[in-house]
Length: 125
Image 1: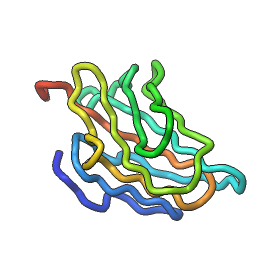
Image 2: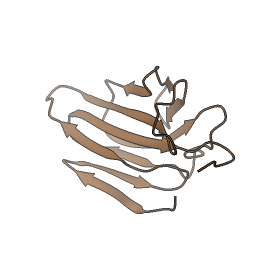
Image 3: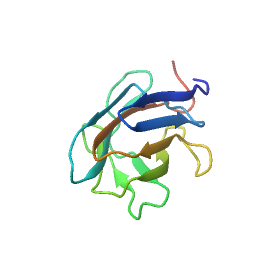
Image 4: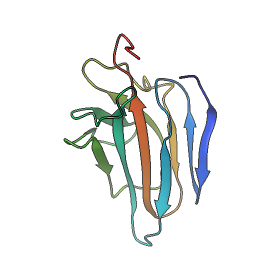
């Protein structure tokens, strides 16, 4: 899918795609004066169906999160910071490898939503 560089910038957050099979399909931040939360959705790049059981990891965040049956993941509350994101799922190519994945900068309180796609290996579509 390529490396688009700056993939999005809105309301004090930014996502920089550094590699992998990710696309920032949706990005939004809702105000909340007390907490920082990162939530999102992982979908199959071809079918756009949710990917259940994908592991979403943020470098410097202590616990990886596994997507539910609807492909949703939730981190938080969490401190404002810049995080290197990676996604892995059985049968799918990785998004990020600990050094080249999307970078998510969370600078304002509230909920940040990030929707990504991952591709099956070998890529069928």
